[in-house]
Amino acid sequence: MRMEQDEITRARIILSTASRDEGPAIARHLVEKRLAACVNMAEIRSVYHWEGSMCDDPEVLLIIKTTSDRVPDAMCAIRDLHSYDLPEMIVVPVIAGYPPYLSWVEDETHQ
Figure 1 (cartoon, one colour):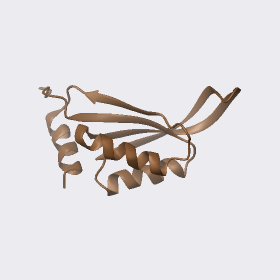
Figure 2 (figure 1 turned 90 degrees about the horizontal axis):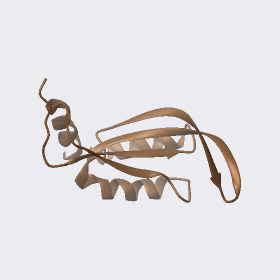
Figure 3 (figure 1 turned 90 degrees about the vertical axis):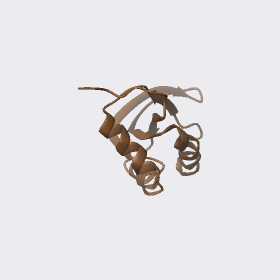
Figure 4 (figure 1 turned 60 degrees about the vertical axis):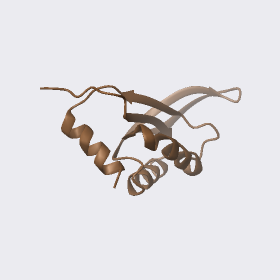
């Protein structure tokens, strides 16, 4: 199987959200606005320090499939919709992948 590898034009945004309601709401908004082709969601637990306290909370992890040119607008939308003061937004470049899938991501975010 041939994998496409070219200039980095696709990206993933990793994001954790506070609830079963917030995660899907952000995901739907991003896909509806064509800022993402697809968003995977999984329930997780996060352990961290916040404002001097140890926290152990359920969250929803989002893996947002998008293109590099959509990342800035997606991050602005996330910031507007997210309940956290300091949301995790980590962008990971996609350096290679299955060409038909990568084309689909491009098509879905540029209609």
